[in-house]
Image 1: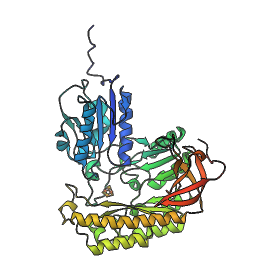
Image 2: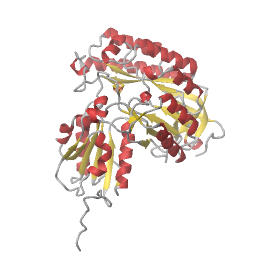
Image 3: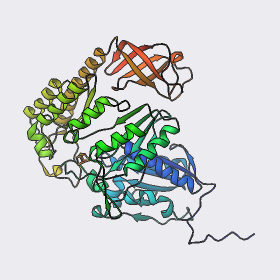
Image 4: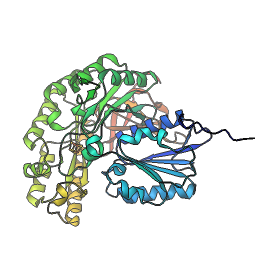
Length: 459
Ligand code: SF4
């Protein structure tokens, strides 16, 4: 029998083929990997877990990862061990920034930049056994467009992309080069996607983006974007019937008092504020070209504490930024302590090629690491104090899908203000929102509790 000849005018179909997708980096990348996976399924692919043998591997990379090159090469080697003749696609921020380095990794067949990430199904050759290597990537100034994406953390929580790119110029950051200018989804589409997620049983939606609070930039055809971030969260609050909405992170300069006031009064937006601090030293913030100074950050903390008494406030901090003196680092330690942040995510500075900060005088790595250790110790103490304050109090806890519920004695969930609470397994089900009284502090930000009668929401 003669084999049918594929029509070159029609997109290739891949029934009978498997694809495995893997993500490095942030929740936004995870949401986008999920969207890419759905498109590949529409083309006939069957998805298999990332660590299994597959005909096609897609690796969505990150540029923030310190060893993006090593991690990418490692995952490709693993994929090729599982299937030596697999067709390997690498996309994401690292592919956008270093296409030639990615191309030269043995086994890579297709390199797709940030814009081309969502064209993967169209860019795949009809014959996956080809030895050709292709690179499709545009220049930074041509990066644009907005692709809807969401991913499920588990069945209870979903990450919804509302914004992409960044117009800021922080001197340590490659993201604006990897993702382009700030742009946003339409308010109508975000509301629609959130309604669909809520309708599918999701209990908590996390709004994600590169610079989420900068929502409202971009153009649609010849129309400028018309909505602000405040309008977006007001619309979601009114129109989406979901138990909780969380905001992943907002730059301190964009966390305006009216936003805080609205979150304080909202039934759905949880009292969890993640405000990247990066440094408590104004001199360092200046060298980083951040758009606020420590006083503005402290002012935001005061506003939140006065309007939202039980709020959780957390921060990202970079240690050992170029030129950071011991005195400047101590200012960060003091700032974090004095403002009683509830948690601190500490990142040791690592130089990124192509950034302004890479050209400044670097702090020795051993000093950077030692500062990370000191700041982490303070962060842990603050998280412990925050957990201690909740002892004896009652919270609504949203229980999560465990990896493997069998034989597990405890089930975990989060309070609105982001404390992790465990209760005996038999007293709650994944997806249930249950009132819990806090009994013990298990560690920084970690508690155990007892469920009170009557779940608020059934599964
Ligand atoms: S705000 Fe600064 S750190 Fe964040 S993505 Fe934009 S440039 Fe990077």
